[in-house]
Structures are given as structure tokens and as C-alpha cells.
Image 1 (cartoon, rainbow, N blue to C red):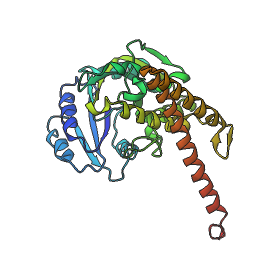
Image 2 (cartoon, one colour; image 1 turned 90 degrees about the vertical axis):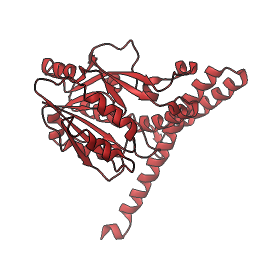
Image 3 (tube, rainbow, N blue to C red; image 1 turned 120 degrees about the vertical axis):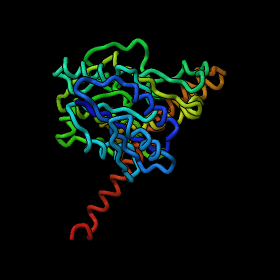
Image 4 (spheres, rainbow, N blue to C red; image 1 turned 30 degrees about the vertical axis):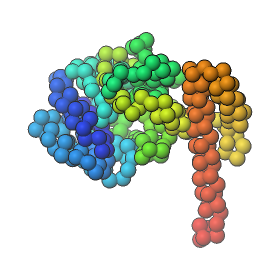
Length: 318
């Protein structure tokens, strides 16, 4: 048996379409269950979930504390079987999606983590400039060139949240998502699934990429906007600072940021002067990733200084 787990908040329209698609999934011989965690929605999400109670092996739970990872951690307490498949509330799976994960988990016992292929489902045709975008970072979409096989440490970020599976025994051992990273409101460091996969890799767990386990990730019309994509780069930068910290720093700020921000800022200006739209966009993307790293570095350094002051205060020592 396996469990599919997803968290949702205030996206009742797309959730209705997603759950309808789940009704057409082929069931593995060992069976499956679906756990949906409502992260305190204020729209019609509870009614949508309830409307599928007699059509899906559905279990729902409410998590009032805002944050996707708080919701997922709550849902992990309801998982059954030996495999937990994680996805999002805007993902449309192929009919054999669960069959493919089940087959891989049974055939590859040495692997604990499985990533599946994520293709785009565009709400509207994408604009020409989308070819300039790192679609993996912006939309959690894989390139068509991705291949099956074991994922080395440097490629673990290819395991995307919309389509991944982890052996349930890992979660039953007490492992949970880090709630300090990942979706929580509109301003957050990205990379919660990558953080988990990297953490598991350091513990000796191996990852395998499965091109035959396919989902389509819905890309909303408003996301096909340069301003939205460039803001995504800031969140990406914030997450990268947490995921790949630089040990050489000054008062908690990585030294390379002082140099790189100036360099990329100059390249943005140079691209503007030459009126190269693609060059401007790419330079702004790189600059915003560095900007995000700087924002997160300053934020964490401020938190650490505050914690140190609190720990050294007379009241804390009583």
C-alpha cells in the first residue's frame, strides 16, 4: 500500500480539477490512500474535499498553523503503507502514476527517495521570453532531456515537490519537513523538499529519478509575468543561502556576496545600456538570486545576534 499526501490552501477551483483527475488513477494492487491537509482555507476548499469522499480513498485533516510544511508534517501522521507519494494541489498525474512509483519502489529496494517527471500544464500559451527562464526553479518543471537513473549528490535538487516519493519508514522514524523553509504566505525561502532530500542524503539514503512517473504542473496565467518570475528568483536565493551556506563570512554575511552583488549589478546596467532584452532579464535573474541570498543572510545573522543577546542576558541565566 502507498499514501499520497498533499497540502492545500484557498485554491478550491484548481483543487477540484486535481481531485477529479485523481479519480482516474490506476490503483496499485496493494491499494492506496489519499491524505489532503487543509492549511486553514477560507474559501470553499472544505466543501470541495468533502465532495470527493465517496469517490476517492480520501482522508482529510485541518492544520490551522500557516505554512505548507506544518500541513505536510500533520499529514505525515496519517500515512499508511511503505511508500509516501508527495505532490501539490495544482498537479495532474498520468493515469499510471502510482503504478510507476509502486513498480520502482518494489524493484529498487536500495533507494529510499524517488523523483518523478514534472511537465508543464500552461493555463495560457507561454510568451516567447519563457525560453530565457530557468523553468525548473521558476515552475518546478523538468527539461525534456532528463534521464532515468540514480541521482548523484549534485543533482538531488531535481527531485521536485510536485512529484516525489519517500519510503514511509523514514517518516515513521521521526523525520519531518523543516518548517522554517518553504511556502508560508507570499514571502519565504524556497527549497523545502530539496532541504529534506539533502538531509536524507547526508544520512545515507539514495535517490533515483523515474522518468515514467509523470505529472503535469499547472502554471497559472499570472505566473507568466516577468515581475512574478524575477520575484521567484529572490525566494530561490533565500533558499539557496539556507541550503548551501558559505562558511567564509563576515558577521554572518558570506564574503562572496559583497563582490557578486556589485558584479551582477554592473551587468544589469550594462545589459540595459545595450538594450538586449534577453541579457537584461538573465542579468536581473542572477542579481535577484544574489539579492535573495543577501536578504536571508542578513535576516539569519540578525536572528543569531538576537538569540545570543537573549542567552547572555541576566534573566535567561536565572
